[in-house]
Length: 380
Image: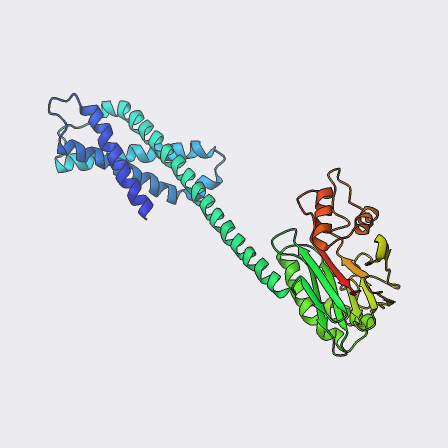
C-alpha cells in the first residue's frame, strides 16, 4: 500500500512537471488549475496502470510476448485512458479552459501513450531493482544469522568435547579436533570405566556440517553407558545394533574404541572403520595395530561380529588414533598425502600441534575433511 501511495505522489509530480514544460510559454503562465490538471494526469495514469497490472496479472504471466512489450502495451492503454479521464475531470471542475477536439486526439494519443510507456517502464525497472536489492539484503541477513547460529553450534560442540589435555595415574592423553566446516562430524572422547580402566573413543561420522554433528553428539552421549559393563567387541556390537535403526541410508559412524589399563599399560582395541591406530615407540619407531575381523562402520549392517586386539604399552610409548582426514588430506597435485608419508611424519612426532602443522604444510591451508587425533601415552 505504501508503495502505491509513493507511486501516485511521484507520478503526480511527474505530471505537474510535464504540464509545466508544455505551458511554460503560455501567456497565462503556470497556475494552480494547470498544476492540478498535471497532477491528475500522473495520478490517474499510475492508478489505472497499477490496477490493470493486478487485473491482468494472469495474462502477463501467460502471454508469449516479451515481458517488457506486454507491460508497454498495458502502460500505453492505462496512460491514454488516465489522460482522457484527467481531461474530463479537469474540464468538469473548471481547472482548464480548453477542450481537446476529436481532430487533435490523433496527435495527443501517441504522445500521452509514449509518456506513459516511458514512465511506466522506468517504474517497472526501478521496482525490479528494488525487489532484487531487498532480496539480496534478506539473503545477507539470513546468511549472517546462519553464520552466527553455526558459530554458536561450533562453540557448543567444543564445550561438550573433553579438554584437549588430560593426565592421571599411569596415562596422559592429548587430543585435537579441527573441523572442515563450522561444526565437525569427527569427535573424540575419554572416560573412566567402573573397574578403573580408561575408555578412549575416536569417531568420524559420514558427512560434515550440522547433520553429522548431531549424530556425533548422540553417539558420544550413549557410548560411555554401553562400554560400562561390556568388553570392547561387545560394546561395538551393541553400539551398531542401537545405531543402525536410527540412521538414514548412507549415514554411518567410523569409530575406534580403546580400553586401557593404567596400572599395567595393557590395552584392548576395537576398530569399526577408522584407519589403523599406531604405537609410537622409542627412537621414532611406528607400528600399526590392526584389529581382526570385520571392520564395517557402525550403522552399515544390522549385525556385525566385531573383534578386538590386545597389547601392552611400554613406559614412554604412545598409542595414536586418527580419523582419515589426516592421512588422506589432499595434496596440491590432487592426490592424497597417503599413509606411508603420514607414517614418516609420525616417526618425528613431537606433539599433536606439530603433527597438524606438518600435514597442513604438505597439503595446504584448506581442509577437505575434519581432522581428529588422540594420543594416549604411558608415562615413563
